Length: 448
Image (cartoon, rainbow, N blue to C red; front, side):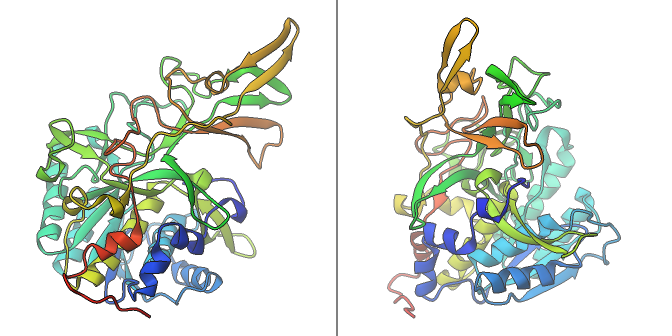
């Protein structure tokens, strides 16, 4: 999920490594060495090796040990966007776990039949110690046979010590899709992240201090009301979803979550409300407006390699897979699925993401024919839900005459709260404490 921003609007590996305690973990000698992160992504990429090599060189990362495994044969499909989705997965898994090997596992198409075969063969043939999938479909759109089949494959991975993580989705509960004309309704979650034998990874928005410590985190949910267009100012702002005024009309995209309508709740979620599997389990950086930089090759331009900023749970999932690989390195043994551990880990290992509000939220004072009109932050954002948010003016690079009020919150049916919530799960990992939790009792840290 791209932004239209420059490199300066995205976080870099050194910034994220500092913010989440990875640098201290590396100092202990743990960087994923001896582990292999399997990334499942169809089509493949002819440029991923050169992209990740250049990305690594720029940020002082070691050159990655990257293998590409086609299942069953090399793909015939063409990725016209320059394989950016693959670059996200490979570059940011490597940024988190620079010592781990990466195996890009490539099915020939995006059909679940091909994807399931690739995942099964990756597990059966031991092609990775950790698996990551930055893809999914609306659970309600998938037949029960596919849901059961995918869950069984994930279970095989879990019992053989290979943990599988999937993105929880980028469109909230799917009731309002991309702030545009598509309305899924009723609410649903994303498959295969809904599988009780997979770990569902959601997303957050992030702001860092000048020393790269975390200033704040919020549940990822972007709302985009229109403030001005071609010289016309809207008072209050104009909804961007004209076709669904009864909903949170400005919702653009955000972390997927909520209850499955198919899978019962797993035992590890016994303290979470409801009777069905709840998503997500954990989160990491995903908001494309506070996203991560990637280096990607764009066809038919020169120079072909360009810096872009990406987000989505497609970013968060490989980041978590990288940390899970480090945790297995420190444990010295396969850990299998992450989710069952997460719900019993100490508070210090996972940062709870709480609702935040700001005294400096955008407000508006506008001179009108009848006098001065004052608008609260909620009114400026056309917020009909009572959600609190942090707000920022945003103008798009391709349209100098248009301005939006970009807000960081959640969509109407997903809510950040203390403890587990359906936007961020349990929160974001505190990497050093998180991985150190899995060190064998009495083990002396390997100090560099």
